[in-house]
Image 1 (cartoon, rainbow, N blue to C red):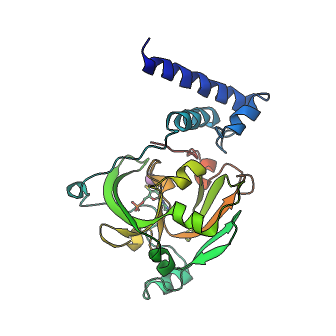
Image 2: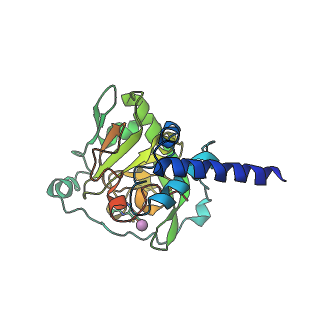
Image 3: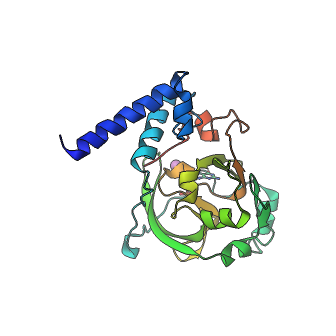
Length: 254
Ligand SMILES: Nc1nc2c(c(=O)[nH]1)N[C@H]1C(S)=C(S)[C@@H](COP(=O)(O)O)O[C@H]1N2
Ligand SMILES: [Mo]
């Protein structure tokens, strides 16, 4: 039997174990211990989403990079969908100044709760990558994103050791969360630039999240706060995201 097959069988076996652990009582400890149970495991699509999450986290334990592209592959037309201009007075009145009043609050299980202005974020080392955005609605587009690594900001505020999820809220009311594997990933950025310019308003200005290994809806626009937690229980119905409450899996790895 080839190495790959053996590895695959092993992974399938372990995922199945994680799955039954997630759903049955006794093994739950093991799956939780290894961080293989997503917060929406008890939801409508709990079995599928738990399988996918456990399999990806085991298969991709080396935290591989999402594919990057060449400048010539950047899409001429990158759609802007859902919110394209938040209905928020403070937001709108801040547009002419280039978001001088906007602040990104970072709190929760951190050593130094902080607020960052756009300029503060731009003072961190900047990182640029050309990646493909894949929307669950059936379109994809390639763009160049510039911003600060989320890991740089997390290091600046200092995480407490229990940190397990990073929750985000947005000016238009969206909220979601990611796990630490994606939070520390080198391509996970708080972006303020797109295709060499300031991030346009329809694409989430002043700052949007890029989580390159997950599908479109995880890439939150119009960021407002970041909260570090050790549980998803205190947010909404406890499934980790607003989307999960509406049937979109919390973990949307691609
Ligand atoms: N705050 C916020 N974030 C969001 C959305 C949104 O409406 N509001 N839409 C999501 C979805 S489903 C997709 S595909 C992308 C769309 O990003 P774009 O408008 O830059 O193409 O943003 C995601 N993040
Ligand atoms: Mo999407």
